Image (cartoon, rainbow, N blue to C red; front, side, top):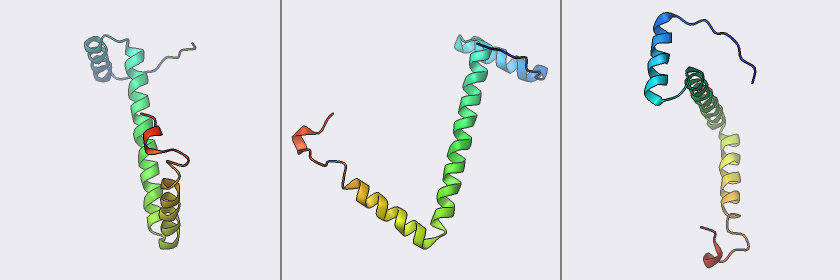
Length: 86
């Protein structure tokens, strides 16, 4: 795996070292987890903003709700109640 150097202030480095130590992980792993968490947070914010824009358009929102309603009807297609996987 390729690596690179990242400059961080000493306070952040100390916190990173403390987190890594308390979790029994490398500092690189803690940084990777933090970046992944922030990336997911940003993705969810963007998705929420997209749905908010969609809700502002009554016609588009009605289409979305209808599509959801139709897809809910397909969940058990060709399955009897006792055949549903657990």
